[in-house]
Every structure is written in structure tokens, then in C-alpha cells.
Image (cartoon, rainbow, N blue to C red; front, side, top):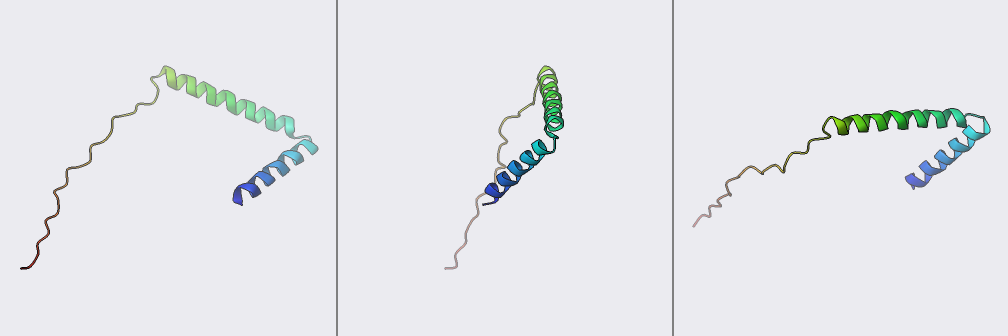
Length: 70
């Protein structure tokens, strides 16, 4: 239900932006954001990308010893 409400608000905002003539400014902002993020991804890949270390080993835990009263 929350997703449907969020989508309805998004559609209403897009319609309002088109009605009030703000759509070109919003599109320009998205274009600029896309260019900046694309440049950062290219620079990151040139710089060596993201290092992913191997899996961490779980610490060796001694098993619990249950003592029962005789």
C-alpha cells in the first residue's frame, strides 16, 4: 500500500511539474546528476575499483560442554 501511495505522489508531482513548466529544469538536474555519477564511476574504475576482501573466517568457538548431575 505504501508503494502505491508513493507512486501516486510521484505521478502527481511529475504532472504538476509539467503543468507549471518546471519539467525542463528537473530534467536538466537529472542530466547533471547522471553526468556527475557517471564521471565518478569512471574515475573509480580507473583508480582500481572497489576492493572486495575474501570471506571472513568465523572465530573458532569452543563447543559448550553440558554437565548433567548424576
